[in-house]
Length: 310
Image (cartoon, rainbow, N blue to C red; front, side, top):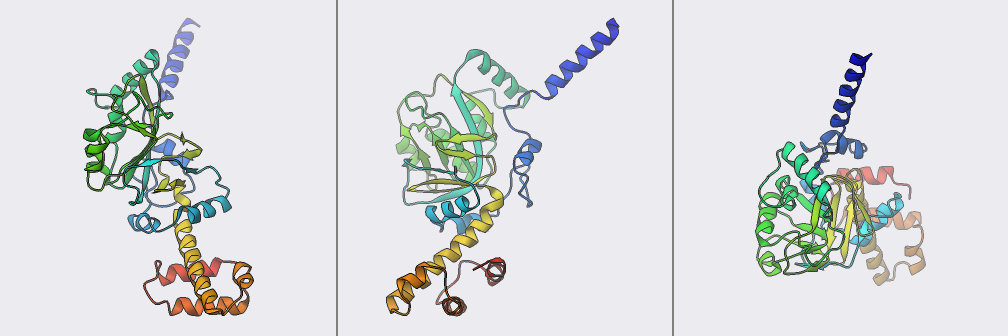
């Protein structure tokens, strides 16, 4: 009986160790968080939305993206009131998340022990750990609970490292330092809640690539972010392509409607309500003779209208 008890205790310790919380989420956990994504994934398990879709997303307005997500039941994906380093330069990318909390010594000790076991850098602060996992196309998104003074997650040194790895920038529900230096990094951009010359202190990183809250938005690792000067919106990876094509067609419908209203061909009520067969036919003919390059391929357009209930 004694031997059985010792064996049971040992087994329990092994089970607890196997399920203990990592700093960085495992690929299996990230896949479990994003099961509706059926495409290619990055080695860490995050969905790999194509670069082409990320580029097209830059041309989508926040309102158009918000409307598509709202119709799909995603009501908590937008956050506004940012300070933007380069307001006129939109940014899209695949999200890497980081969660920070006020420092608690026993928790900080555990985090550093886990970080060592996960082969994370032991020199410098833990705020460098999320940067180490970035790859091209990533956007570093952190919740540092709005802390400004003594809450500066990066300065221009870390900013240069971020851009070298991701060719993107950051979205911090918190602050930065060295903004003048960050502004000089060509291509780098940042959405932040404040700027302060102080150093990071009394804060602790607790997770990488786990779900976080950014203001009123819920963010998962592998989400795609659309960041513009009026706000940021986080898009579930499995909805990005649908959102892009839907928003592109909506923009074309608006362009067509505005043109026909200026021409006086239709009344405002006809354009603002469900279109008649005559208007639909006119719109499709206008698309087939569009005076320029459409943002989508003809196959994408045909598939969209094949599945669309006017």
